[in-house]
Length: 395
Image (cartoon, rainbow, N blue to C red; front, top):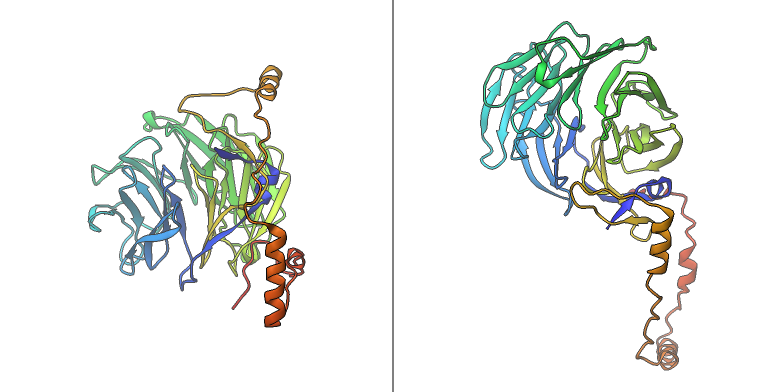
């Protein structure tokens, strides 16, 4: 069973685990393809967290390399990370041996994006501040393809790993077939947008139908991945420092989440841009990084603290059975009527074995002897605390 995401379910996410604050801001996060592990990158270390146990299972110091971005590769047994201290190479780290197995050189400036090909084990892409995008094969040291003459490029694979999207400044997006990288782009989209807001993040929706572009202003927007037409804007959040705040889709492509100032997370419907909720977490500053787990109903946000979010345990949700690979389901009136007929009857709970009246009298006699104050637990149900749900009080 899993939770069907809707407006009410998104409003019931709360902080499940908070890790101690660190001296370095989180620069990049990524879940493994199976959703079991989380990779967190900052200038001091690469850290691996267990999504199920919500504990840190691995930490590799990175003071000699100062990475800006990192990602999983080769069935999540290896990690790629950038370097910015001595050179601008990409290093491949084996998580089992903690050794570097290969170095990839080519960029002349720092790298702002690394992504492995979905469904593939060896291909990955990188975008750098040298205005170039490279495609690599992990089995060779040199790049296989290069796209030049871009401005502040961003890049992203589609969910199937068949197409590559690249951007140039705030003027255009190009879609290329991965199997024909040497040819012309299959689709080109040209835009005239507000030049004051730089594009900071480009990503496909999990269903592959839309592209989401984040900016260093207080808004992000989506366009069609088919013809590039504008779809929706998602705004209303604060970004006073003009930081590249991350946004993320839910796995069903229905909702978009974005970080904001003062530890807040804004949620919108992807289809119409309707603001669904504003969640208050435990980050004191802007929420810079955010990722939704691709296989579980949880997401992670981070600035200097890593925060795991999950639905409330006592919340009211719409549950749906997990489908087998390739299986689909459709609901009709006949299906609903049939399910209503086969609904199981209510089974009454068994009566308690202990006589309740006798136990209450005994408890009252004991309190009368000790003189302890009796606390009415019904008053505890009314919370007069001014803190928002999900917020933890400071020590």
